[in-house]
Length: 218
Image (cartoon, rainbow, N blue to C red; front, side, top):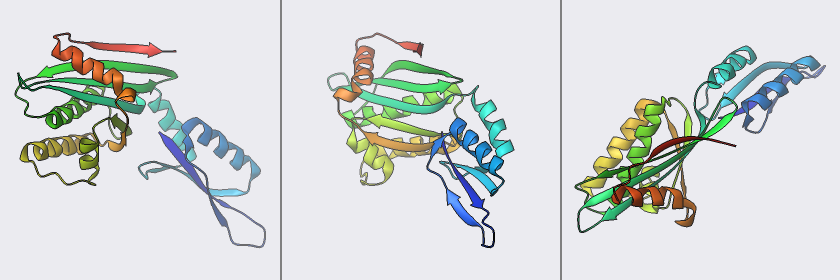
C-alpha cells in the first residue's frame, strides 16, 4: 500500500500553504511526517492511502503495526487454459505479497469442467485467483491483477463491452466478490512470456497435476 502526506506549512505573516507528497510506502511516510513535525512548521498533517482513506500520524503508526501481520502489496498473475475436445479448463494463479518484513509467493491451480471457450477459462482463472485472496483473508486493500488476456482485463475495466451472457455472468460474480472483499483492483495486460508461471500452472492442472504451494522469497 502506498500513501501520500498532506500538510499545511506555516509561514509567518502569510496564510498556511498546503503541501502534498508523492505516493510512498508507509514507513517512509511516517518518517517524513515525524521530521516535518520536528520543524514546528507543519500543521494539519494527514496520510491518505490509494483508496482515499485518511489517518493522523498516531493512527498511521497503529495501522502499520496491524498491517505488518496481514498480507499486503499484492500482485496477482492469472491464466486459463482450455481443452476444446473435453470442454475442460486448467486454471493457474500466482500471488506475490508481503507479510511483515518478508515476501511470499503462492502458486496454485485447479481444473474445472463444462467450459465453453478459452475466454471463459480466463474468467474462471481470474475468479479462482480472487477466491485464493479470500482464503488468505485479504480485505480492503488495493490489488494488481496481471494476465495476458486483454479481453478479460479490458471488459473488467469497462473499456470493452461484453455481449456474451456466459461471460457477463462471470463478470458479475467477479465484481460482486471484489466489492464484498473491499478490494480495489488494478488491471495490467502483459505478454504470454511474462505470464509463463501462471500459464504453466494452468497446463499442469489439465495434466492432472494439482499444485498449491506457499514459498518465502529472499
